[in-house]
Length: 168
Image (tube, rainbow, N blue to C red; front, side, top):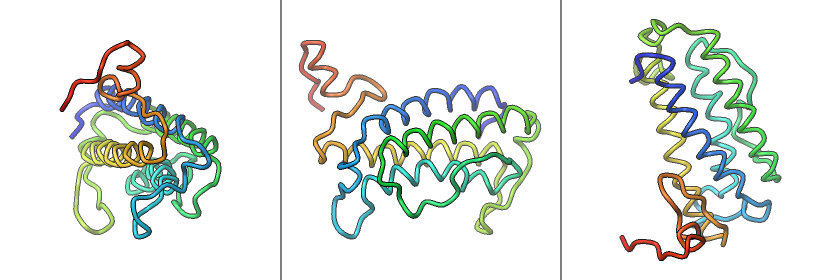
């Protein structure tokens, strides 16, 4: 749970930049990549990550412009990446201008399933984004795309440094 806007915004700034790197590496062809026909395609995961910013935060009193439906999925990878950048920027601006630190202790009803503070909602949104970003990187590998390093160098980045990635 976040206690101050500044702490959240520092975390969001880093995590949003990592998500943007992933989305920027998608191609239109890769959006159809999936593990099985019963699972979401890479494009659906990517678009859900974009629209979830508005969908999840809509459970609070924040107002800002951003996609609020995760279907239909756009067929353009660049549109998805640009939409994420815009949604993230609008979300950050809304937090900066509409909430005070004390607001993060306000309790909200999250889809009628549970009560949580706004600070907890922010943590949930951050973790939700990270969860789907991880799913996207697996599908990116299957689609033959380069995966950017998120919490350290990726296999491709190790290779560019002339080193072999450590074995895990």
